[in-house]
Length: 144
Image (cartoon, rainbow, N blue to C red; front, top):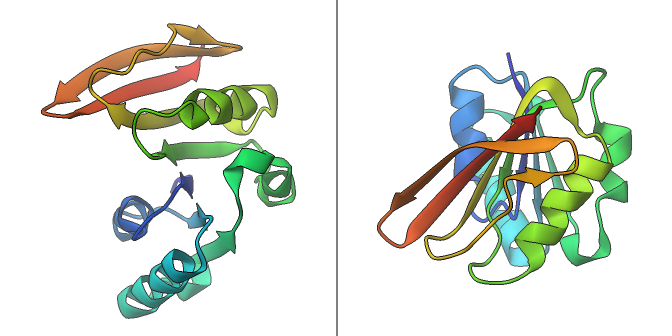
């Protein structure tokens, strides 16, 4: 099973879906206390408490807090869904690459506004797929 991180987790839907499909563990991160409370409630409702970790962190401050939680071999799947049309996604993507958080086969799924632009490569990560659905755009990165 996959080891997952859901950054800017919101309701936690992406990480919860991963857990429901057999992920071994998921780390949920959001900056707002009310959102973290909602994620914890949703995890309890789904019965995934033993496989989930929820953290209230402001990702503007970096990802150093994530290093002690990184499993041996790195994370398999990172969801990155920040507020649309900001610069935060680019910064966090670079921090993920620099911090070597991804496993060898790990994937970052970045969601932003469909009109957003992201580079083909970010450090050791390469965008191998890009899709647009209405107003949403998705960029999939993995190690080259």
